[in-house]
Length: 104
Image (cartoon, rainbow, N blue to C red; front, side, top):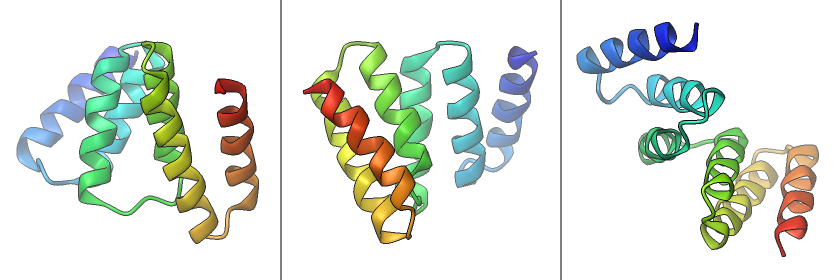
């Protein structure tokens, strides 16, 4: 099922390559099927196009962690904490801090 969604999102991105949300959705679909490198690429593209309240940093950090890029995952969690705090999401910030503590 995810393959169909991935193909559909890629098709939409061909028509609207600067649509931040399409990159976000595609990154999440790649994450679901454990295509972490592509998830990272899509989420980073999303973050270059839009301000995020924190959730995208979860996907980014977890993807980085799963491919062994722990130092980059730490940075992503830190950015997620900053974004979540800035947008008034203390629970998300605490979740990211706990994940960051486990990486240390």
